[in-house]
Image (cartoon, rainbow, N blue to C red; front, side):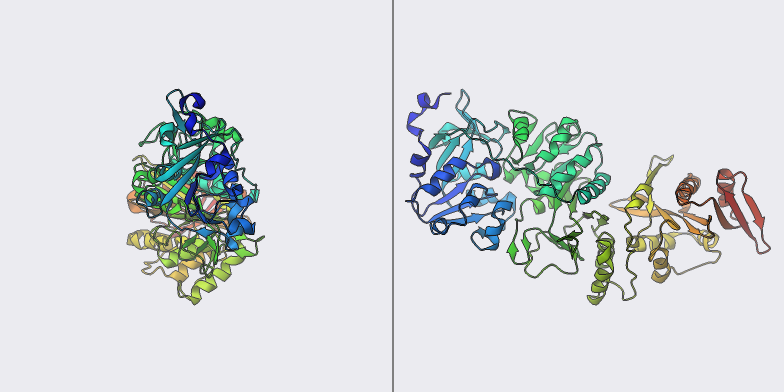
Length: 618
């Protein structure tokens, strides 16, 4: 459509268009990479413009002017989210930050809690029916445009045309400025690749095939996406599309086939990345762009089964409080979409949230897991909302856990050099018991190779992994749930009490290569419970003593045999050549397990009714 033929009266130059903005106006500007650069430039350079209040989320172009005192004397900047380019200006008090959930901003405009006189937006050229597209910036731009008294649009042929609620008719626009220029790009800066790789490894362990993902703002959620390349049929319901997702699109990892809500579609609000990404979303019906009011509504999010929210944080305290928008008193980013998606994922059937965070900052001199948040730091996500936290040292399961359990979960994924200090600080605050032993200072990533799964004849799965300090409560519950005979066969006495002190000795500063304990866990409602424990402990230089316990209702299902085989594999890797065991003569089930695995085992009966078993490996 030729605008000069259809609506010549609406066509203006950039300079002419911004003269329509009256002094004292409240001006909304489109978001991030979709902002109309030439209109912003013309507005700022219009020296007659005075006392203008600008509202925007993720500002870029204004960063060129923000340090000019003449600009600051004419414009007041209010941001819903502080971009990297505006961060220093926020520290210096040159902008004003509005902390609000992203899902609520459109309603704020609609209800005139923030009145808008002018909206500056960017669209692609209209089609033959007069419909333009907001392209890569629908988010709060759609509402900002609809609720402004005057709409000025930069018509840019380089803006992608996107599907969904991005459609705007030229009749809804008061003035049009044709200006061709490259769309802003937001290219990720590479940070610590080793940390990204390890966090990506743990995120991969948590994401199942067929899950629907939300990817939060920031370089880290974007950077870990390529580590999901081995998954199948992932779906996307997220605020922002970034380049980190491109490899997953190209490899058909993201298909959206398994989504139960809006299947076969990537649901998003905006797109920030490279021209390669913009070309990919251009006129691509797989992408369905909607307003933030819809995309970030927790009730809408919850309609997606198995929705996994992945976002980042600046610091986390030992109780699970999360800060995302400030470093102490300095505002750093924004609340954004994190709380909306965390609460939506909690309501999703089978959904949960993951917060990923490097364990340290400032070259490993500062722990990001802290006894308490920094003075002035804001609590964006409360301790009641938190599900899972991941660092490069592991996974902390926080949901429904007590403060004591949270401390232990977080201490074991903190940087090793801060673990003891965190435990001591937790003792001072009476979060944990005074005699609590700190987690080992070892880097335990090698334990991730010791994760196994066994499908039982009844169709249920048992997952096996090494015992960790945070398993103390569940392991005590397991021992207390066993029948008296099981306890007697394992400990050779009718033990009634399984004290904290006793269980702490199982893992306190343990050398996992010389002493390995595997636990078998099964899903029980919303929690996982321990149903089996198998362990070996070094007895001599090349021999380890092995022992097992399995829930009585699971006897005869091959669990002990599986544990024995698995522990042997681990023991061989650590240079052991045989197992030994002491078994009561009446414990025929265990003797049978040993005989089946080791036909050449030696059974030596003692006078006290015990049998010493020697089992050389093949």
